Length: 572
Ligand code: GLY
Image (cartoon, rainbow, N blue to C red; front, side, top):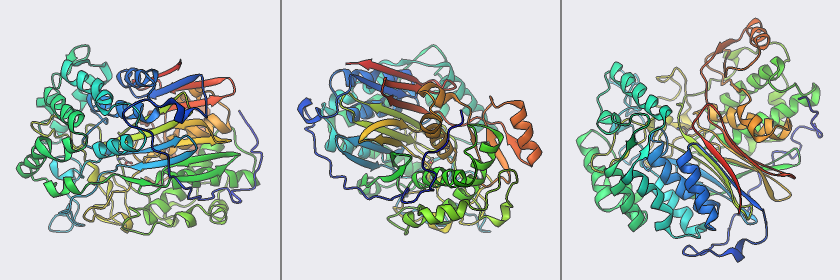
């Protein structure tokens, strides 16, 4: 699978941080208006989703003439019902959009409550309290999902909001058949939190969800109906808001009614990168993902300018990508945070000369000295992603999260949804290792109404102004590796969508020192060679890529086999 990069000139103007004007035309939001979309023209439309309920519901919206954003809104709310590990109304996320000739980026990341402060997770000695930013009401940022979906609907929606929410309301009210993997995740979560002595109401809501049985969520159905009937006010005002605030007051949480009213989803300019004749459209800060992907593919290209491009998943490839990972995560820890609070040097971090210079000392066979590179940082493992392309060629890459699997583990009494534990994505104490043994930087310290740094990287790739790839993944910091490698697999190493998502991946993020996380499936020889070089291998799997690839032959969609995803490509 070895392929030379045609223009190995290392990012010369490659990582052009083009702040493209993103004033997208507003489609009407109450009826289908095909005429506004007629320019792109595809005979197929596709969804790549983390479960079958979201896949079927999103495809149905597309078949009814809804656009990719309509389908994304439906999928987001369905996942809040059927994928409680990460799907949510109590969390947040990012949506990267290509609509007609424009690109756009919706930031519906959670925000720290007004009463949050820098040292809120430290004890009297100034040490980080291990579980407080991870479990319970105090771990939650102000949820952004409902405001985000409402903003997406207002700007791009073509079908009725009520219709888009209908599948989620139905699945919560009438129930859905529990997948074995969900039942196992619930059982594992209950036993692990019990072992840790964590006291929460998770079991009360989820213990009865056994594999193959129908699971109903009446309180969640009520919440979704309020959102269906009142739009975002159904969540940030009225009964649902009251349930949230009461729950916070009774359980030591910080979110107030004023916080809920203060929450705003933000439209940002996506990060645009020119690479190999393609244009990547990806996540800007407060995601670290777009900058990290730019650095990763840029340094690989810089390496290729002086060495041959290594074969995909060869020992040299894994080593070189790990060396790049060290440098990427050192920068991430030092410089990245919420751009509304700190100045993030995006242009400098993606500058061609800087990237070339960063890659210059990467050696094909020896590992660089970790302490000489500034340390990387933390994050958790869940989150979920989906990809959509509609008949007009509009596309959505959406990654959404409540942070850890099942978020903070607490369900808002009366409202029936899990709250996020996104506060852990801040640095509880800048410069000091957190619960997971990693560190964060000053730029990501807690401040009222600040958004915590994320790795979510929903990414689109276009060529000649047409979307050729939609990709993304869950997995905390490993998201960046999953996205980078899925796009390299699909576009640089010419794999099909199916191959690109299922080819084994690896991840290196500076710390733990010289440790590579690797999927099963690499050859024994490769693993032994990496060990002989001095690497420690960590076999924990990560990520769940849902990818759509468009070629001359048509559209392919694929969901990683290890998950419970479903992808559909249908003619319309
Ligand atoms: N909570 C995972 C992320 O935002 O990266």
